[in-house]
Image (cartoon, rainbow, N blue to C red; front, top):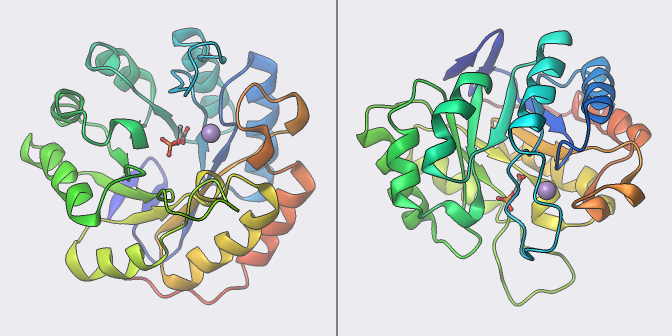
Length: 253
Ligand code: PEP
Ligand code: MN
């Protein structure tokens, strides 16, 4: 069980991490933080250092974005999570972020795993989109072996032959992790599906299967989002999702 300020991950209630794919401006992240907080989200997400497939896509606001995210978290009393992509950035990101995220593409970046293992911050380790559960757990072990016991796993979909969705959500990974590990596991239906239409159903499945929580991307205007617009939930959809998951029976593992 991992505690971040007033939030417990892996405890009796599932947690909701919500926010934009990328921090785009101070106003954007303050607006989204206020909204997701009003709906009951407990942790604010926002990418500042973005791992983009194309070098010509928006790469994130970097440290400037982290300052906006930090301000939004403080203002609305939400712990914040953001991705760190390189070992040199770990110290400064750990200074401002409450949870450090290791992205899918960096799951086997061993120098990065070792470096975050030396911090005192909880680490959310996303599953590599081409990684087996064994490989994922070995990566978690790199962080644990450096003395940081606060590791949260995040299933975010894997690459399969299926092309109707961006990735394939491996819901069975939750059952396997519950059997094989003591670490909490969160589901990210946003990157798993890549399509906002499927996210409410997958989020409900995540709660029903006993995941420690979900992480979802939310944006007031997905059409103008600088990254991952097609999978961003608009405000009314997110509010309805929050109302619906509150009614799902939850069994802690
Ligand atoms: C993210 O959550 O911001 C992200 C980039 O996801 P992933 O690493 O799973 O692609
Ligand atoms: Mn994204």
